[in-house]
Length: 87
Image (cartoon, rainbow, N blue to C red; front, side, top):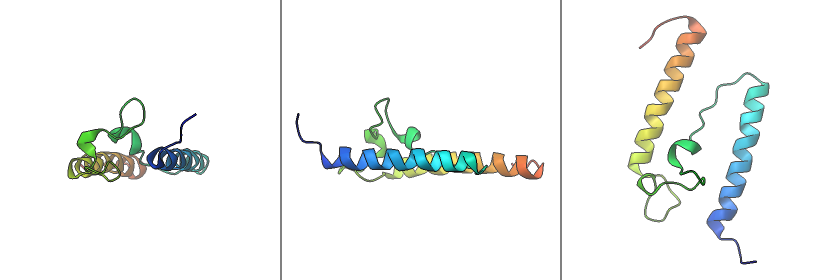
């Protein structure tokens, strides 16, 4: 068996923590924004267009995508919560 890279090590911990947060939110009726699948390929690796050259940080295009997603989810959630169309 080969050594695991640092990125794999970090990703494993991040994915584990994300799963815990999802479970906690579900049990406590909280809204979560699941950003990871938006920026990742089918293997859970960040797509190149959403990463900086070092592969560890989110690019401007990634932040744009996250911002649009967050706005959509939060707008919908607030409108459902308060029974208003706020779009």
